[in-house]
Length: 123
Image 1 (cartoon, rainbow, N blue to C red):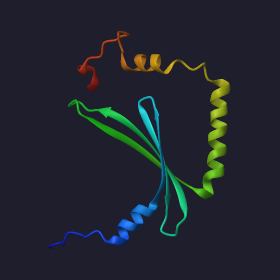
Image 2: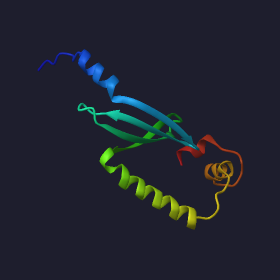
Image 3: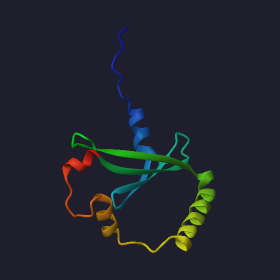
Image 4: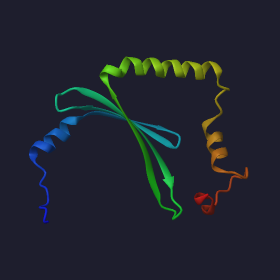
């Protein structure tokens, strides 16, 4: 069976352009969070939150591991309540925050030294 290549119609391009209304990237250590406001065909708005993490493969090349959630406006209130409650529990009960740089160094080296070997990347 032969399938013709699909042409992108101007209607699809217009819809794609209309879908992306706002985007905000937040870099946090080794992760980047993307907050994207989009619209549906019915012009209803929703939010996608994407966590992107750079990962190194055994071949030394890197890829991005991504996790995405979709949050619809009817769920905003419950989501914010859950998020705020969770953050309060952490603030009240977690040990003091360690400097990010020191934490990253500890996370990257298993021997406690500052040297990082490319051989360690596959482990």
